Image (cartoon, rainbow, N blue to C red; front, side, top):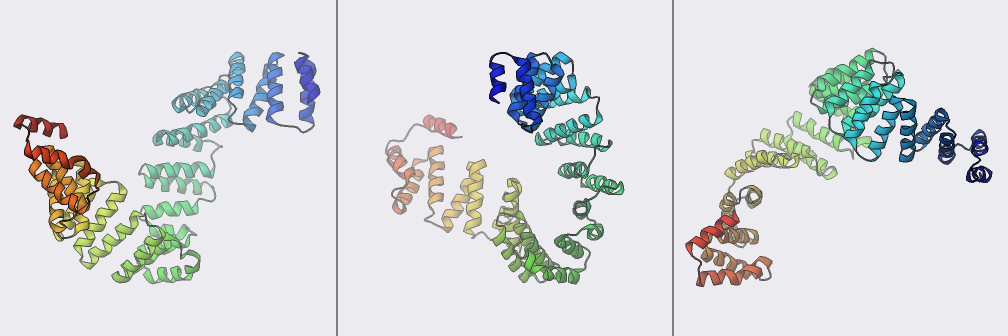
Length: 424
């Protein structure tokens, strides 16, 4: 290495080039040597060799921006547009300029002559589309790859996953079934999963090697006793698996033992406390038990976790109508409405205060509302009650004196109106 570097420092590039090549022949294949050879080959105007050396650099170090820049310069001069756009695309990926990268890879494909290289570029492009949330464009690229000899089992799995993400699970089934018919291996369990999602438990049962999917398929086929026999036989293997617990609960639900089903859902919730399935299952069980309040309460919690707050609030409202004395439901409704419709939330904070006269949150929210509409007498009353139970409350400390002053020296009607609109 020292001899090669000495030649390079003395600008004896031919000798340096030969010394670095000897290192490669001696087995020292690393990024530094390839980069040195690429650099010196460029100086000696050996563009084709320089290109090959820099390709070795990026193969060993895919994040080497300098190598991509050198490849771009060399390929531009050599009019190798495929490698030029491919290198520029990789550089843009490293710089997180994904839209530019997508455009470059598309141009590389347009100039590609080698089917293998083009297919490899399509994989990169499809992955970029998928990461950018452009699922339909990613599907198009995988479909093009599937029409070539470069298609693999992974090609079809990625394609099926994208169809599933875009709610075309039937297409996921079709593409994996076609791949299996064409001789691709290792797709059985994934195909079984999609058959299950498209309500074809018989096909899922025939294909899968997954004990839990087998049990689920058996229950969907009404073969409950076979399902529980299978589940009990694999209990030691799966007893801490949330899917297993959910299936045990489903068995008791299917066989009408709703109390045991609820107990099994409770066990499931200890393993996966954030799963929306907990509340979905409870809602379905309570529906069968005829317990409307808990049915709506659990649908509300299910939709809250799913992020559908409008549906969740409606379910909480139904639960409230069935039990107007439930403080937890009232608090949840009031707090959620406080985020979207403060005026409407007042009704529920008032109900909450009627049930719980010392409710600090209700007292503060009602004081805030009275402040907004200029009703300082009521505001002062709420603050007096809040101060009695929570004298260090920050809102009380900040507003108590002002509220009392407003009572003794009330603002004009016009000031009240202006204050109201400032708070809206």
